[in-house]
Length: 480
Ligand SMILES: *Cc1c(COP(=O)(O)O)cnc(C)c1O
Image (cartoon, rainbow, N blue to C red; front, side, top):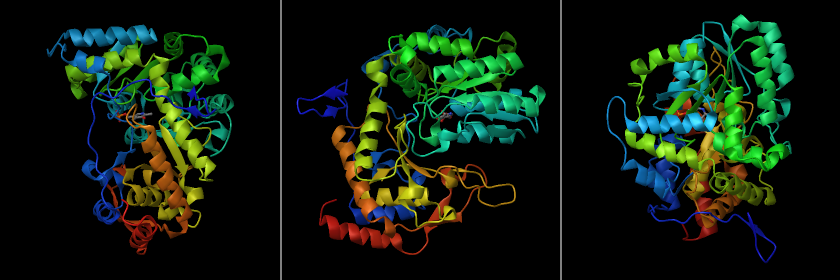
């Protein structure tokens, strides 16, 4: 943020745009047709029909000139690529961990770790689950137990680290389940599903101590680490003047395994697993060629590995990693001013709108967040992501597993949007909030059994999208 003469604090972009992509804003009538065609599931919209894509930051972050330049120097060989060794050395330096094993993306790491450590009926204990992490654990017959601090599930709070594990609950879980019943403890940076809320270094230190004493592996999902690093710097006083690389090295010293999606961390594509545990390294190493690819590429293209090396280095630069959290904060504050319910404090990854409070009149099984995400596309051409009940798997008896939080996430791909675009989103959401009673529910037309949010198709209960479209046209005249 920079202070203007007017006294206003403005998020000044610390980059300039040198390549652009044309985007289109379709008329509202057309948007109504496209969301219907997409089965009221924003995952099924086509990118050409979207004005601002705030679905995710995964694989869609703006890359730097140095990342693009590095791609031309990629050493294309199946085995022993120089590109791989460069990446390995960046990661070893960043986390101080001895071994790196490449994988094609974050969930591939989750697959391998679940195969290695999860036994039927074993429990993976974690601050909070992530969709693909739980899916791999349950696919191996394991169970997931969450031990987030209570406040982590409160929509509004001023706690700086709402992603923290409850260390008391961790100790209690270990005492109750016993070491042998626990497959691993998983700590997720920037907890994705509860509003991109960070974990503190203090919490990592405590969790590490408990896990080491109990002899249980502590696994760190570093996919959303870059925002979390920013929050450690600005919200944890001890780290105010500490170099970011010293923070990542300390994290490396506390964890047994670190894995990440480079679609997020490193602003490229790909992923990988780090460990200093030699035995575990040998076991994981056996699986990489089987599921991912040879050990010096693991399913990634060499160009992506080069871009990742540079992107990881750049994620140690505060002027780069502060861009997303600052823009999230600006959008959240704009919405709060209009009385629109959002998760606070603003976290990383995106602005999270509380759909349960926004659409108070809808029942949990009418998927309020799914409905709000559809309504927002209709009203603005903006694509957000449902992160609520629709994103959960049904209970074994077929009943709905109502999510703790019912959110629409408006993600900020790193360094992609401008301030006027952010203001546009705030404006259209404000209009929607004023007309919130018009938003109706959704029901499934076609419901997949696994990860249903990705490609399930829904339909509106009643003809609310049509009425909302007409109201939009009435209020905005012939403006898009
Ligand atoms: C995206 C994400 C993953 C999965 O990574 P992919 O590269 O999409 O497979 C795992 N954990 C977290 C926290 C994520 O945000």
